Amino acid sequence: MKGFSILRIFYGSLLLALLPGTVPAQTYAAVEIGIQIPEIVVLQPDVSPPLTFDFSSTTALDNGITITGTSLRYYSNKSFYVLIQAGSNFFSGGQGSMPASVLKYKTGQSASFTDLTSGPVPLTGSAGSKRPRGTGTFTVDFRMDPGYLHPPADNYSITIVYTITNL
Image 1 (cartoon, helix red, strand yellow):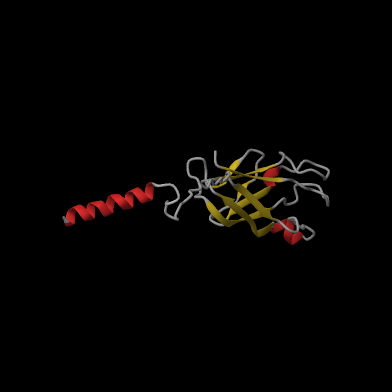
Image 2 (image 1 turned 60 degrees about the horizontal axis):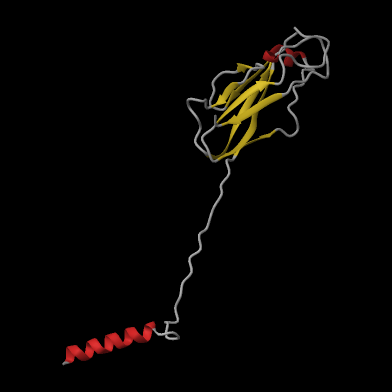
């Protein structure tokens, strides 16, 4: 008979739970959260004040000038690489045409300077060897050695174009 009483109590409790107004005082709600993370590929050169090479002495004209440690800060949530190029084939200003290749560059990892050209060239990484995503800084050193081959001017200038890409 004990089995019968336990069974009756179980069914009685079940019946009470199913009757209107006797639902337990506990409910839940589920909310789905969506997140959007856009592609971030940003490069910020830190060139303040602008790079200026002063060749006002014969020593500078004889030996050239090197400017070290121009910083480039990157932020990327994808693998990437950086390209460098001159904005034109020649410096503007002056009385002649001084080629972009008079300006040379190298990164902190490079041992030697490379001529600046108007075509994009990998500066760090490459399409086949991209840098990992993240943030950081790398530096670029510049060297200029025009010698006595170009006419005097106080307004030679050229634009350096950096491109960060993940393509």
